[in-house]
Image: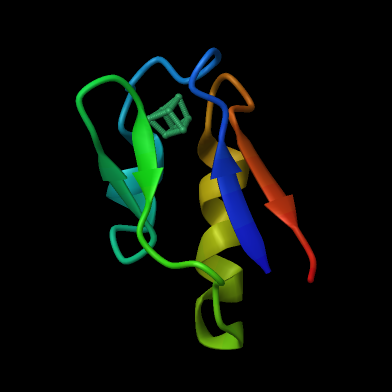
Length: 63
Ligand code: SF4
């Protein structure tokens, strides 16, 4: 799995990094993905982050 954050949509709300700090960190202008690709161990955390993002900025791509 791979995660992308749409910088045009992210509002830096921080829900993703609070929910899944292993996968997301807040950057200057938008959240950034910390693992690429995302291994199976972190798959559930990626799904949780996608679910809590209030602006649907996180896109998950199955490899
Ligand atoms: S939860 Fe969504 S809007 Fe908030 S920082 Fe993460 S990617 Fe951006």
